[in-house]
Image 1 (cartoon, rainbow, N blue to C red):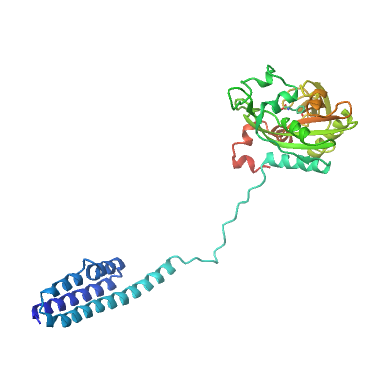
Image 2: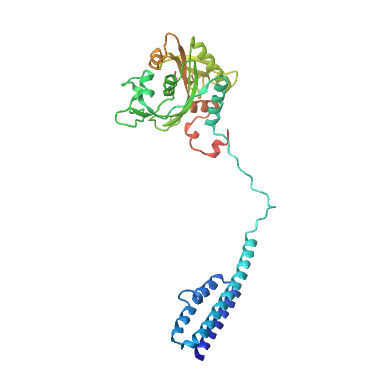
Length: 348
Ligand code: DAH
C-alpha cells in the first residue's frame, strides 16, 4: 500500500490525539466538541480519507478500510474518555460553586395582612350572617332596567344621567351598576318571601378621583321582606351592625331622606367619635357622620317584582364599604385605600 497514504493517516492520528490531550489539559469542553466535528463529522477528515479509497487497487481496499476504521475508533474512544473526565470535573466544580450553606440564618419572611377594606367587609358580612342573612350575588354589568327602572327610577331621573353612569350601549339599556340595589330586584324576582339577604360587591360611577370619590367602590346591599316588617326591624338591624363595627357605645340616629325605591327613606348617622357630638373637623362641625341609606321598600318596587305589598313589607339599606372603613380607621383620604402603599397598609 502507498506508504505516503499510511504516513498521512499516522500524522492525522498523532495530531488528533495531541489536540485531545491539549483540550483535556486546558479543561476545554468546547474544543473537544470541535475535534469531534472536525474528525468524525460528515464533512470531517475521516470521511474525506475514505473517499480516496476508490483510487486504490481493489486488493488494497480492505486493509486500507481497516486502517481508517481503527483511526476512527481510536479518536472516538479518546474523545469519550476525555469528555468523561472533563464532564465530571466540571460537575464537581459546579457543586462547589453552587453549594448552599444551610446553617446561615434565613431572611425573615414578611407576611402581608388583610386590606382595611376587606377587614371591614368581612366583619360586616360575618355580622349579617349571625343575624340569619344569606349572601346574594348579582352582575356588575347590569341591565338598566334592574339598576334603575324596577327601582322606581324611570328614564329622565338624574341618577341615570350619562354624567353619572357608565353605559355599555347607545340605547343605555346596559350599564356598569351604580349601586348594589339592583340585586334587590334580582332577588325578589327569584325568591319568595321571607327574604333576608345581603349583597356585597363593586359598583361604578362616573366620578373623578378625589379624597372622597372613586369611579369604582364597594357597597353592601341589604334586603328583608316578610309579613309585618317595620321600620323598627330596620333600626334594630342597623344598630346591631353599628355596635358590631364601632363598639357598644356607638350612638346612632335615623334622619329623613329620599330614595326613589323606599318610602319612607332615611339615612343613618353615627355620633362623631372624635368629638362626641360637639362638632369638630372630622364631622364638619355637625356632631354626626352620615354612614348609609335605607328605608321601607316602596310598594311599587314590591309589586313590580310580583310581591303583594298588601301582604308583605320590607326594608332595604345600602352601605358604602369605603365609608365604613374610613370612619372605622379614621382615614381621611379614600385614595389611600387603593394606592397599595405598604407604609399606609401596615397600620391596620
Ligand atoms: N343605593 C343607595 C346608594 O347607592 C343606597 C341605598 C339607599 C340602598 C337606600 C338601599 C336603600 O337599599 O333602601 O346610595
